[in-house]
Image (cartoon, rainbow, N blue to C red; front, side, top):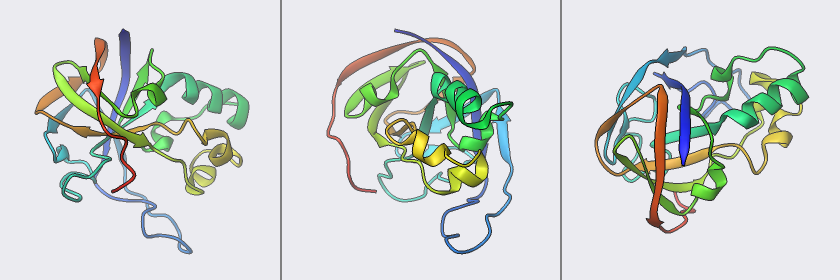
Amino acid sequence: MQVIVKNLYISSGHNYIGRYGKKSLNYAIVDRDEIQLLAGRGIVDDRFFDHEPNYRGQITFFDWAVYQRVMHEIVGGDLDPKKFRRNVLIEGVDLNELIGKRFTLNGVEFTGSCECRPCFWMDEACAEGTEEFLKGKGGLRARIINDGMLTVGEYELEVIGETEIDDGK
């Protein structure tokens, strides 16, 4: 299927993890034209690079259509897609259909491990009601199977098989 990678993002630090009951931090979310992916490790220079062995969220994807709906139905105006803190904003694929699947994008193979579930911080980052709205459509966490690069642009996304759905880290 044809997809469009609209935006690519990285951040050097965690604004929300481990911050329950505290204020969020303010690590910049950097828009990139390309990102370097390393198998089993993540995105070079991103906060989750080498986070944990076999981490299921080495890269995260977010659906352009869901972003548009949040912007219009929840926020009611402009919303920077960086607010979702996902790495790849993509158009043309239902990300939930990639959970438990092996797929390729620009020669890089991924395994869709689980939904990137929204948390209460989404209401602070975007607008009240965002967390609830995103339940079941918060994006996709995936593992990177081989090294490669990903750039903004049009690609053929090919599902190449099944993998186990992952409830671990």
